[in-house]
Length: 254
Image 1 (cartoon, rainbow, N blue to C red):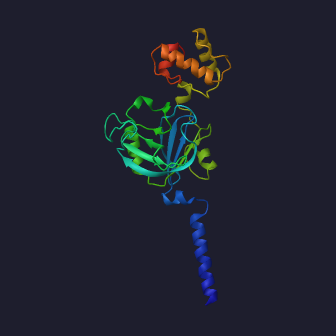
Image 2: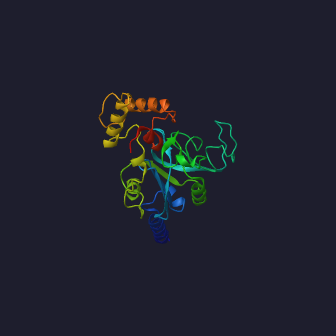
Image 3: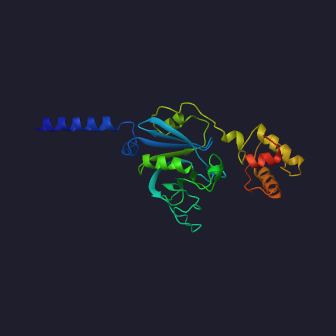
């Protein structure tokens, strides 16, 4: 009898181990759904059963620190969430949260502060514009909302790695998304933290127009941002310190 119970115990352990080895509990519990958001190219990858399903363009924080980075999970799903700060009801065309909200447990919050949501300004998608949330086109977040259950893991990072490599870093084995796709965001947007020849061109242009960046070093720091804001204010542009298409056009740079 003791031998029989021992064999049953061993078989049960082996079955449990084979079902769960290498797979996180949350990943298994959500039917192997996974979201990865890369702020470097402002793209969101959605995986199901370890396979890449779709890649979406998103909008993220105005500065790098606004949109939290790390591994989180979807803790609530809300249709037509009210915009409490502006006292705008859900479903109102003025509501900047759009028609779907996927709340995240980021920075000690529980789906109340940070989320993946729609937006009433489609032109903002793909840019660095939010106060910390991740923006999507309304019709695309509607589709994603239907696929994603509560507890779905969400990875947010800023990386030059491919989606597949990012997933592997966090212990997920996936197929699809093997190559890093810079998209259009890096080539069209300059903001604090940007570096390179495009920033040098920007600094030279601002300086020539009388907006002192206190150096031409190819690094978009606080002095360059201050110069950009002054330029934007003088040209009656949106004063956000971000050099997007409108500001570039006003500056006469590409």
